[in-house]
Length: 306
Image 1 (cartoon, rainbow, N blue to C red):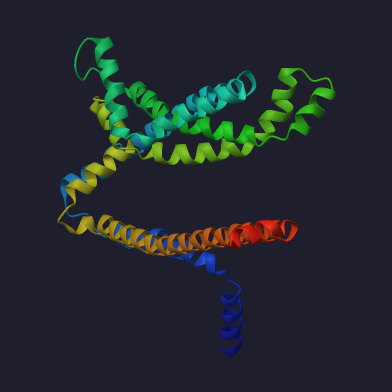
Image 2: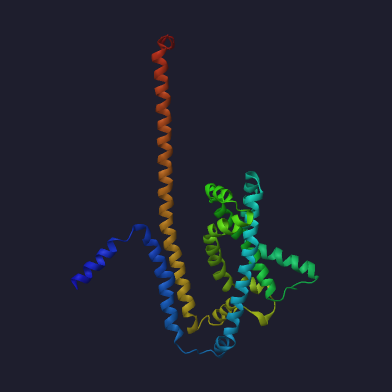
């Protein structure tokens, strides 16, 4: 027992302090909800409507959600990567800054506002209200919302490309296509992975986008089914996993807010101390310069005293 205690204490001592918020987040937002969901998953379902929702073609809906997410992801990557390459190699530095600024504007607006604008455009060209029906509109909506962020990610990745490697590829005699396949694509591999992960999981379980743009009830996504199940289970025993997850998630947000608020306070204090030190250094520098002038020109000192 003593050996086990010593081993655990040695492992705990190796944990860095900055990993503590991450460990708390993983425990509360992943481990606890997973245990609760596993526990309540083996309980009998009392509601016939809920049982019908869970057993009726749920795997077909899940497969459709995977298909829609993969199509939207491929479409987003096929548009954003060539666009980022074109912007980076064909535009001047001033134009790049302007384009990056324009790409950040959609990120500052609400998703609901952007979806309303997109749906209004579709209704205008179709000639009727609520004319969007089918998974194609869901794919277009997902691509439309993620395109600025993914393009911005690729441009940031290309901006970190060393010019030495670019010169080396050109010295080897490669054309633009050789540079694209042997330098740019391998360098952008991390951006492809990060964009795919950040885009695929939210689009797989999306609820609002598919409900707002797709009015066909026969092509619902898995996120809509989960939302309907949670709404039907409110006030019953089936709602416990959702309530447990929501409580754990809100508590995790509160913990992270407290942790990061303390970091913000420390950052403000450090910035204030840095400004104070810089002010003191500038004041001392001016005093030293004034002392040098007084030593070199003592008559000014005498004139000032008179």
